Length: 196
Image 1 (spheres, rainbow, N blue to C red):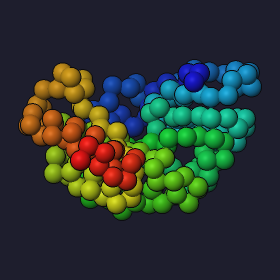
Image 2: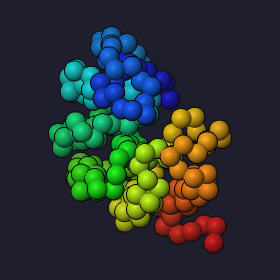
Image 3: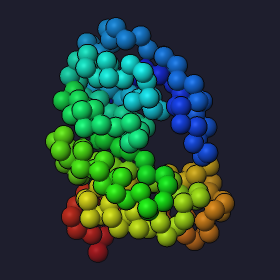
Image 4: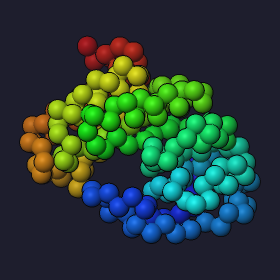
């Protein structure tokens, strides 16, 4: 897949993120490249925060697109979900960074994607590990995502699993959660535990 980037930056200024707050245009919107290729990975940190996001979605040619960093659920609408599906966006992702108390908000996002025509198995949720959201809340998220049949992308705060140091979680919780996420995704994908 060809890698492209329309913008850099994200205006949300989340505590755990190092992305610059200012959103800047990177790629001109005349799309000559999009006419030649068939598959694209879009590297924007927050594609929907681009003031021209709706115009881009309405005017880009239908291809196979993948938003590597996912979509910002706070500015997602049913119309945008429909546009993403109609333009060929695949492997849709969004982040559930805060507590389990947001379950109804994230259920609404899941329902918008499925209403747009995405199968639950095509969706996945970023969950931040070893951050201020407690381990117990993140385990509850896995349980609910299993009910929705949605995969998880677990992201270990501040450096990744290989160099993880206990900051907000215990080290055994970090390791256990990594294993739980792997098992969760196997069950969502295969509808059975392939290692049993």
